[in-house]
Image 1 (tube, helix red, strand yellow):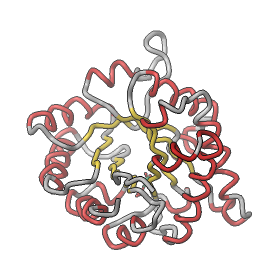
Image 2 (cartoon, rainbow, N blue to C red; image 1 turned 180 degrees about the vertical axis):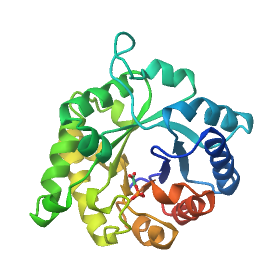
Image 3 (cartoon, helix red, strand yellow; image 1 turned 90 degrees about the vertical axis):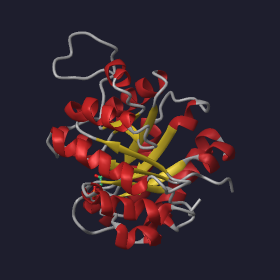
Image 4 (tube, rainbow, N blue to C red; image 1 turned 135 degrees about the vertical axis):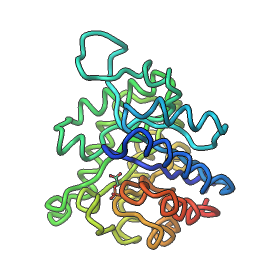
Length: 258
Ligand code: PGA
């Protein structure tokens, strides 16, 4: 099994004001600066990317800058949307695609998520493709089927070469922001199924190298047990990413888990 560098990203969602976002970024940098062997990033709201990017650049930070979404077209008449070129210009190197809030609250389809993922990769950037089942789907025993549908659709048109810039985040919808996390074994089972699908689509080498994050109420207290699962390669963190010390606690749990 290759050593997969664990990857922990904070998804700040629609929180913070400008000063708070800059302070949080500085805090995340400070609190994680010595933690080797884990890839760390933060995804502030669009309007804070410039200020957060500048703050991270000023300290030559190891913390990567990510966006929570992006539009598929390079420019033009898309009122309210933000292009990948605009994001790149601000130093953004990662983009979340298909977060469950965009799928279930905003109404993004598998098809739109797929277009976004491909646009991100074609722009030379890195994509965190999110998937996960709702509570009703879990109770109906459809977890693997939903993940398969979302991952298969989300990677439509993505080449093997591009897969080195893809991370998948398995985020059961019922666990996001609820305080209820999947058990380490449930997460492991879902990750194994996703990795198996990637093996079918791209072969064993790509599957073995792919990093799969868990997301959904991950916090310092449960991070170690989740990340220590063999197929859990880090986390996508919402609530616990909004305080630098709790986020750093999760990053610390990932140190040495490769
Ligand atoms: P949570 O959010 O950690 O607050 O559950 C995770 C996410 O939505 O990425």
